[in-house]
Length: 209
Image (cartoon, rainbow, N blue to C red; front, side):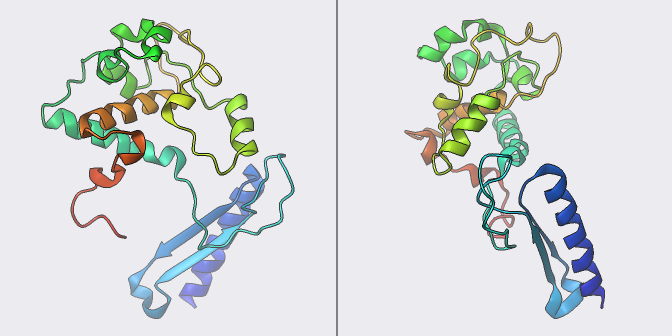
């Protein structure tokens, strides 16, 4: 009975989130105390389109895979702080020389020369967010395309001028964490972004769950 009540509560929550945000959602609860019913799941919404971009035909299932999106920011930040802990990066190092030095992006974002890793972590850099209406339309038009960091920071999606003078205020911008991802890739010594093992941030015992 407890498992049925929990499932009903999860389903109500999934339905509410899906309805409010016009999105698909899956929820899972791992509760070993419930014995055979230790994994309780619920799903709502549709996984093909939505947000006014097309017909919704394929109902969400608890087994569906989802892109983590901004959930990965907590792992990116932790991985950068691990580099700091190892003495490989200083929070007060200029981010530009660490990840963009010598690239065409260094020219577009020359004003980043005085912005530090700390400011990028805190989203006080002034770097504009790539995740706007143009990016949303492109992503929905190409649902199978994995946009690279350089594409995200290109003129198509990210304004070259600062949104505000660095260190004067804080504003949510995913572009900051694209830079931090490039910083991690540079220190990992991998040839391309796709070769970066982003699970390396997890301590032993936390992977494979």
